[in-house]
Image (tube, rainbow, N blue to C red; front, side, top):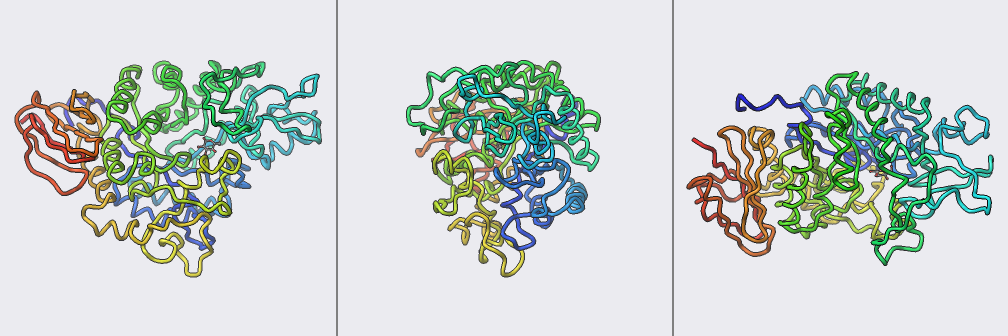
Length: 543
Ligand code: GLC
């Protein structure tokens, strides 16, 4: 690294890999992935070349929202293992140099959480105010007009005490009242519980929602709401003016960050959407909020080079001093990137984009195989969002079992005669799996491996500056630079060949990698030929 390169944190230089534990590897044969399964695949992850594992929820849960409904923040659901297995996972990961971050779901608990059971038991219960209970309006209407993200109103009536409780997701996910200091203290303690078990940080679920408008005012209608929403999609018809991103939320996030800082260099990665100007505030003043507010902007972009460049450039311009960018192209809530961007060729270009931009990349399990959306027969659909808002909104398609090999069930379950997996295995598993792709030098799996290796070995890529270059239509070309080390990235988003120029950088460059994995050697920088949907990573360092 160049002597002037600033010392970076582990969460800046490393690649994050999201494991959805239900779907990664099933060690005990019950058809649901588990923590032991993750342990058994740590060598795979290590050899793949990623740096940090993010585990989606494994807490005790009735699974109304597949673990995002937490019944106990300080334990492991028996279907995933136990605390001892979790501790072993952390030790084994750390021994391999991998960091472990876990999901933290602060906005809502399960309705089966002991806190909610107490809270709903009577209006006088000491935990009554831990959740958001309200009377119906005098005319019998709901307390306000907010819609639930999963369809229907955000209020459910509880006959025991004759009041409504708030839930912006499933009715089985009542929302905590973060204005109550006891709630805040109890939740911050759950962070400490896991930090003491040596986790390296947290991915924080819908952390922009914690504080709601004090008076819970009605949300205004969204004048730009799509016309084809289902009648029950009240959420989709509203602006969320009073239900998310309240100014007062920042004070809470600062306290969350302070708690992380009690334990050294622990990272907070927040699930945050919203417009750039409100999103960027979650880095905090002088970096005192989240180190990485998740940046989903490329995930929501169309497959268009100039749009993607615009997204990156506007992000770079908006970042406050010292804030570190990050990019996400897939997760457990979005359709698979290979399906979203149009196919396998596009998925390869997307991989090169994600892993060569300035900032921390997060990769979703199975994207390294080019996994596509898996059609789920109606009787097998389980996602509450899809069940209420229609099959096109189902997230099941992106949560199917990881494809390890060509054996029955794609090697997802490690025991013979295992139960049927909780979601169907993709029909393409005989060819799209780790074992087969591992043997194919030109597979997308080997593209990811090469990208991880080249990134790890190059300060220009993991730490250097980003500078976009003007280029041919349909191409996104940029330079990453650290001292004399320079990496040029040229991505062709079109189905036609393109020729781009980076003549200002010198005469020739050396191709380190093509997304097709079939090309190296020198190229003239004034005429870089790109095949359809080809990306090139080119060394054009100053010698
Ligand atoms: C987040 C999670 C999603 C979950 C929701 C409610 O958006 O990523 O999976 O359904 O929050 O917890």
